[in-house]
Length: 388
Image (cartoon, rainbow, N blue to C red):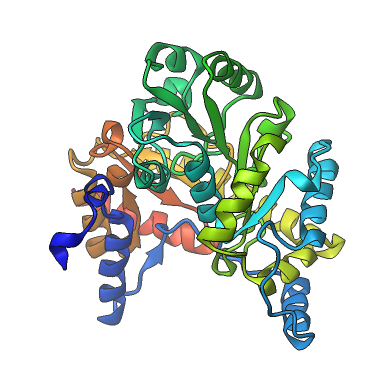
């Protein structure tokens, strides 16, 4: 059977973060107490109103398939969210509810990526983004993007690297693993340059609700021909519910609906009805309080890491990650992360997954953990580094 596996699998690398999580689980099974700063998952869960709505949906028997594009009421609620949060009039007809942001990326790449064509994205970036491109036999072309560019692709870099075989760009703002955003003026230039070259722009905005230093904005405010990905996992704290959405130009809607019907039929009905309660005033108040708590953690952790000797040249302005240079301590970030796990009892992840330019020099540190645990982690790291 192994000989029958598709050759495209050769273009998809293992997810090393998950391998490190397995090691962490083994250590915990052996009795070691660990502080987790690895996985990108909020330590908060869905607020009470969402849980009540899910229970009510099940009690009411709302357990059948929904329309492939999503429950109409939820599409309308997301449309209203864009209007209230961003001042944007995004028709519900352009909104596709998906089985997580992963399914949204799946649909976007299925609709837009041609076999053999390049899709430009920054290095570092979230590994699954390039693997979605590879799954549809496109070629993810990573462009080294350092702290001078806030670890993001710039318009100048795009124009420099765009070639005859380039089909489009896939960006994330704020980004995993760096927590940095693309400024609206720069993003507008990128979208314009891509349009001039006849390409597509996909923008992953799953952390857009967690922007700390400026008013949040969406790429949808800059153009109607961008494809935007979002999710209920991060700001809305519904990771395991597997619910996201996709905003597409009207010209793409029929194609995306056809793909959704065939690839996953619909998102979870219970999750969709539960998500309606995300937009209730009491839920939004909880989310904003949790956002403030994430910012408080960031404002503690970044100076603390710098004091320990990590390089953090760019303050992350969103998400819940710090992408830290550990080259002062090791020339192998993967080995360093494992040492930190085994000797300090702190789980961080190496840059190995996020692109070659920072693979050996950087680690991603998540602050999706309590402030008390972050303080304990810093104390453990201080003791560990003193022995190196």
